[in-house]
Length: 215
Image 1 (cartoon, rainbow, N blue to C red):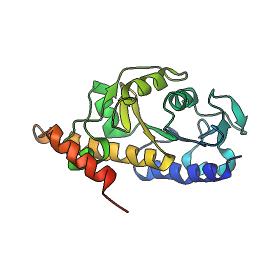
Image 2: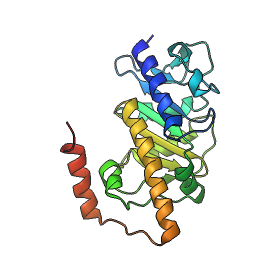
Image 3: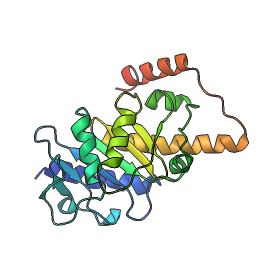
Image 4: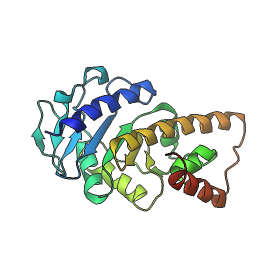
């Protein structure tokens, strides 16, 4: 089932270690098929270089396994909760990327101090509260934080990063940009106090990037 999404997720999962977003087997990507509402997600505890299209797990929006030989990711219930409550989202990424997670351990947002952040996130990257792994609790925090936000990313206190997108590739891009800007912000904080961009300028950056930039 959903062979195209399965293969796409194999390729996208390889982007996570390549961009230093994960260590060992931590982190995962899922994609929802809008036609069937079925979700393809990484199997639990499998190394990224060992992933194949056949090893991906297909679940319904309640997290029940429809097809797959492995257990689904331990974050499956939260992914499914997000999909059920944010119908425009068709891709989700979870990482424990180093710099972004450092902000999460403090419960701090990542301030909007670069034009690239204004472009991609439309402001600071917010940080939600603490939630335990394994159920829907993390998904509930993500929905609470991102439902009315322009940001496609949020931090989870003491945990890591969740990003969303209209497809899985967009969510991977958001995860990559989150870590890149977290590293910039952390470095700037070692030097002094970064200068935040005015919200009116952030709005202009976001509008241009989302509606004019690119092909």
